Amino acid sequence: MPETLAARAADAVTTAMSSAAAAFDQGIFELETYGFTIIPQVLSHHEVAVLRALGARLDRERGEDSAFLGTARHLSNLIPRDPAYFPMIDHLRILPYIERLLGPDIILASLNSRIVRPHDPDQGLHGDVPAGLRRPGQPIMVNTVWMLDDWTTLSGATRVVPGSHHMPQEMPPAERQLPHLLQALAPAGSVLIFDGRLWHGGGMNMGTQDRHGLFGHYRTGSWTSFQCDPHQDFPPAWLERLSPRQRRLLRMQDGVRPARWVDDRG
Ligand SMILES: O=C(O)CCC(=O)C(=O)O
Image (cartoon, rainbow, N blue to C red; front, side):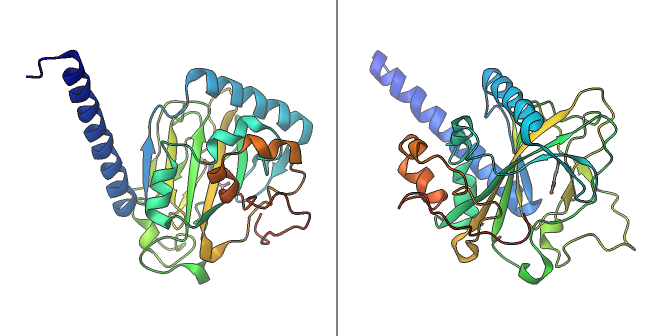
C-alpha cells in the first residue's frame, strides 16, 4: 500500500489512466465489430442545454426542411455560425477514436444538425459512404452523433444495423429482413460514433418534444473535400479562437479561403 499522500495520488492517477485506456480499447473493439460505439457523459448538462437552445434559435433563423429519406429539420455547416461549436471539432473524448480508425490526416467534413419533430417518421436506412467508395478494411469516413436530448425509443434514437459496415451495398438490399436492427439508446450528452459505411437512419419521433442532434462527419486525407465548407462565411476574427489542431481539421492553418471546396452530397 502506498504510504504517502503523493504515492496515493500517483496510484489513483495510474488506476484512472488504465481504466480510461480499457474503455478506449473496448470502444475500438465495438467500432470494429459492430461498426459503432456509444461514449457516455461527453457533454455536461450545461453544455447540452446551451447547444440545444443555440440550435433551436439557429433553426428558427436559418433551418431548412430536410427530405433526405424522411422528414426533419436540418441546419448545415454550424462551424461558421457560432464558436460554441468549436469544442466538438477535436473533443478529447472523441477525436482519439476517429484518429485510431482514420489516421491523423483527417478533416471535419461537416458539422450539421438534424432536428426530428414529433411525428417525423423513421428515416430510410443508409450508409454515408457511397457504394463506389466502399472497400473492406479501414473506413474512410466516421460520423459522430452528439445527443442533445435523451435518445430513447420514443424520441427517435438513431437506428443502426450492427456489422453492416462490412457490406458492399450503400443501403440494405430491399429483399432482406433486418431482425437485428437496433436503436442507439443513451442519455443526452452521449456521443454515438459510427463507421461511415454502417447502415443507419433516424428513428420516428413518437414523443412530444423535438429531438436535437449534431452530426460531426470526419473524412480521411485521401478524401479531403468538405461536405459543407467551413471556410464559407467563417468570420476571420474567430481564427485565433481555434487551436492549431482545430485549424488543421478545418484546413484553416493558412487562414480562411474565399473559394468553395465541397463535394455534391451536402
Ligand atoms: O437523425 C439521425 O439519427 C440520423 C440522421 C442521418 O443519418 C442522416 O441524416 O443522414
